[in-house]
Image (cartoon, rainbow, N blue to C red; front, side):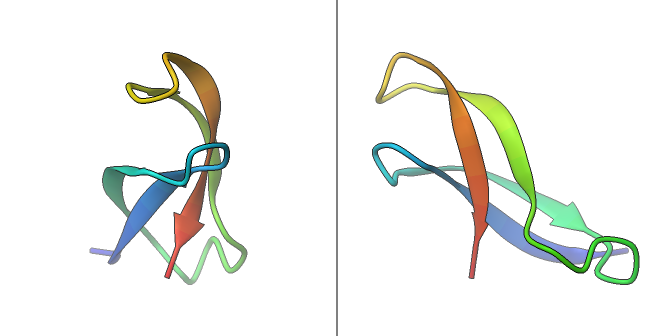
Length: 49
């Protein structure tokens, strides 16, 4: 089981998604293209602290 992380929209900075990741495999910050309800489109969501 990995650690919990939160994904925030790169444009409006709203925290929309939470997921888990394995820090042994992914040492860098996660970036995923996801739908943002606030922006109304697909934007890059980055891992926050």
